[in-house]
Amino acid sequence: MALRIETFDNVRGGNTLYKALTHPHAARPARALLAGLAEAGPIAIIDPDGAADGFAEIFGLAGIELAGIYVRDVARIGGAVLGCRAAPLTELAATRARSVLVAGFDADRLTGQLRPYLPAGARTVSLDAMRIPEARLTNRRLYLDPLNFATNFALFRDTDRLHTRVVTANYWSGYGSASVTCWLTLFDGDGEVLADWSQPCGHQSGAIAIDSREVRARFGLGDFAGQLFIHVTGAAGHDTVKYALDTFGDTFGEPGLVLDGALSCTHDANAWPAERYAGLPAPAPGERVILWVQNSHPTPIPAGAIGLNPMGEDGVVAIPQAIGPFASQAVDVAALLPGLAWPRQIEIRAGKHIVRPRYEIIAGPRRRIAHVNVERADLRPDPALPRLGEVLGKAYLLPAPILPRGEWESLVLPTPMALSQAGLPIAALVCDCAGNEIARAPLGHLPRDHATALSLDEIAAGLGDRPGHVELVYDFADGGEGDGWLHALFRYRHRRSGHVAETSFGAHVFNTILTYRDEPQSYGGRPPGLSTRLFLRLGEGEYDTLCQLIYPASLPWRSTSATEIILHDSSGAEIARTALAIPCSGSLLFRYHALFDAATRTRAGAGAYAIIRDSSCRLFGYHGLLGQGGAFSLDHMFGF
Image (cartoon, rainbow, N blue to C red):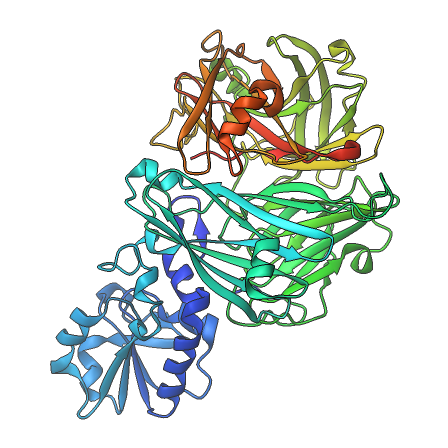
């Protein structure tokens, strides 16, 4: 059962009304508004901008006696709102309503204009009664300004041996923000608020870190596993809160005895709930796959509203439990889909109840966390795509690291990520660090329900023990269709320790001055996107940082990149920088401790981070931490 509310579309982007209606700090005043209306009926509802259905979908109208629905847009007269026929606002005076609800924000002007049409003695209220506190607004003049709802969720937990840490930087300062504050709400597994606080971040591009151990100590908490809601005020340029989330365990007992070998990283949750997600791997032998279902709304998820099905099959198995507002439920995938095994994949029928969920894979004392991706319902095959290579070379391509083969195994699992994708016509290209293509592996036309995980050990043999990268591209030699939304999961296994990390992403057109639709994408304006600004969080203490930068190019572009790695301390002050040149279609694998010497790292101190900057080309990056005993993490980087 899907929520009937618009959250995001790929033309207009995110729906700020949705965020305003579901904001955790709007829930209590919204319920108080409804309670007052239930006692003051009958109620006439004026729906000036189409918010009434969304409000009712989230909070319901139980106990409300409707006296009519009224609109001001002539084109909407006679249409359905809340299951009723919408009447012109000019007929409002004839209603028997005792109260009038204006289903909109910033309604003072309209409320004043209504006076000639109000029924005798009727009082007027609006959704402004459920506004979040003024202190949490960036633009107090326009409530539905997207910058007022720069928010996101993070999977956040702490135990005696397992911890989480959210890390980002005040990148809004680069867009003119005068001052940024993080407002933070921690929910436990039942959706109850454990803590609510603010964290000033100043006006410089300083680091922002929220550590579960510090939160636990500050508020005197026990173990918790739930959600951290992040709301940024003072944002400019971006209304998306991007972060890296590290999960790490402690080592206990005898030297080398690992009781919880967690070391994993993933990035921001993409704060817009979707109807479906895909790319959830079935468990391999010896593994448990746990899906974290975390309710993003102030209304319960009904029992059976979310379900799983094997990719390419229609049979859906529902999660039988109801999940309360902002509550979390850890779901063992094997309990719902017994017998389904890696490399099979799973779809999540999420019904717009949850933002992009995390999954956790536990194998013995080790665990890792990754995310699934939005499965789009709006895409159709692009008939021009098979011929696009004539002008755009590789066109859409998806790059990912091949880590040194002596230490790691690298695997690729193509993942269908649109409802219309009946098959995936794919080839894998292996490139060395110098940008030479040394191998090509056609995968054929993979069916939607395929179980093909490609180990790169053999096809990347030409690399020896050197790093390189793989590029997934379309290959129509065996037929098939494409839409540009080409995705895959990349899994890496440390051969000696058995520790595993994985990440997933989708294809883009890279580094060509030609444009096609919205490609090459740009963070700072219209296509073509031909520059780089990536955030690199850095390990502290026993942890080093691993980073691989890839210079993908659909067509030959500049022969080498003009890349700078700029090291900042926690306040945002620049400590050092170094220049790198990466060959076109090549890559570079480096470690923080090797790139900057000990004295420089000491000056940078705790909370340091780096910015990868290049104004000549768009790089794609992956980062992770290196721990003890072969533990490591890896995920793709985010830019701004």
